[in-house]
Length: 254
Image (cartoon, rainbow, N blue to C red):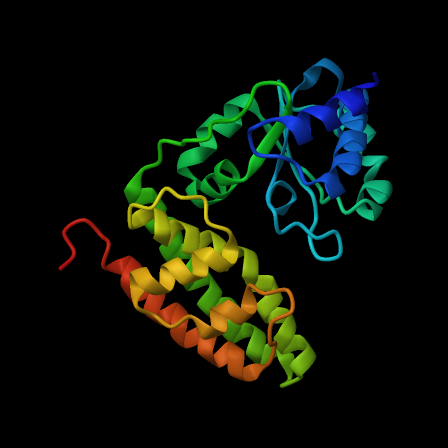
């Protein structure tokens, strides 16, 4: 049995989070490329995001990898970069590459990203990453606030730069989707939820938590949602309301 076949069997048959069968071949191929390119410096390879959920669709989603290395080595990364064109054709996005040390140290800097990864991932080479992260509530709240403020600025600047063209407006929504999902996951976490919600379920849950009707944000996180100026207007109002909710979660806030 080849390494790729072993990976496929492990990914599909394990009782843990599974790589969608449509992503298995591409994931197998990329891990083999990483092993050859990075050698013993590669400590682990983890698939995260849509490819380990039931909603994965090769027409809409990419396959995301986290590669953990023993040390930084630009020459080895250049070796792996030779496969970038073929990786793109296989719907594999440029991987997130970190050393073991930087991964541990970044959890207080990027708590929402780590929360997202911890919920939907499958380690297929090396030591698995933690399913349950110990996160600081204050830092999660702060990143939620930063992301929302950044989204507000991004949307308003985008409107000014769009020249009023609907095609550019639609692009604004698409560019905001990942950040919105991270924030909503953070809001759910701040509320005490530890369930691993998919985006649609997460949106519904955050409406319940915040009492904000997220109609515009809901369209933004859909791949086939409405993309027009009215949706962006709704998003701006909803982001302001979400910011108020997040601000109210400060310790000592009344």
